[in-house]
Length: 212
Image 1 (cartoon, rainbow, N blue to C red):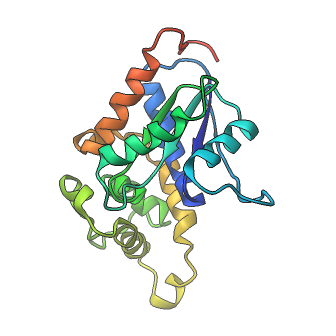
Image 2 (image 1 turned 45 degrees about the vertical axis):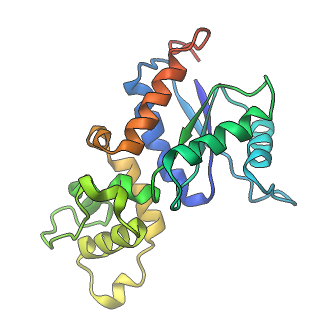
């Protein structure tokens, strides 16, 4: 099964291991291949969600489309409604799609695995306490990106000079690949909503989860 992720920026590629995991958890048994719709190389990158999705479907055809938007202060329901509205204008050729709307930023979906954070930071046996927002409050954290970045730097246990050389964006992608269980995130309303939407789409008549 082939899926495409449409998102706001390149750092959102870190969502892809979560999407693949969720597909497996929802019952997809066929080989899964995911692509992030990289539209940055286009001479005139599309503006607006509908145009980004249109270009992504032309260049990265798929059987299932994931559309990511951070809520950025709006309600989860409002962002989901925006996605549904934009895709409704594309017509009947639009593949099945699932909104992916972390309430703040995707970094909040990586607070739950301290072991993986230490491993991704290159110091799996580190003991420095990590000041991570408890998962129960992750969706109310004002700046998940800053919290996760500090946790990565602290987990590395490097001195100040060497910390400056750490590329936390790359570490975030490594962290996403290392994590293998995202079930703790089910206590987050936004993640639980995403999982319900995915299950609803997979269960639709005509959607085949056994073969790609």
